[in-house]
Image (tube, rainbow, N blue to C red):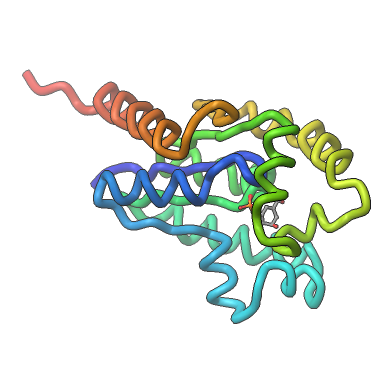
Length: 180
Ligand code: S3P
């Protein structure tokens, strides 16, 4: 069975949209972790944060990483903070190809402004720009630990998806057993 293709990276770098397209093109099942957490909890991420706190959300996230990394042949879009946790990172890196999407802070802010407000509790602060910079800085080491990086600042969703497919297929063909 095929290894998983896992997308990580900061908020608004394209994980969900790119994941959806990659899954469609490769005929794979998509697991969008945030959507699954909302489904299981019966409430939005914003409500989980406000009613249960961030720690409870992180626990749900860790449980899902442990569970989904045991499956195969998936495209998994993680939430932007999921693989900052080293345990989550380790299980996901063992289960397949982890691609980290990135974008410049200005572009992240621009994309977030065009999305419905109130969906990203971490940026529901007086100065989201400063918070983006602060979070990017504190997560820099975690994100750069991923084997593959795709900067989506100048890419369309389609182009980013093609790049991810390219990485995943190179990765798979180079690890296929050689038959004599
Ligand atoms: C988070 C990113 C969000 C969501 C939650 C926390 C983060 O997902 O999981 O709001 O810590 O970066 P997206 O990256 O899909 O916005």
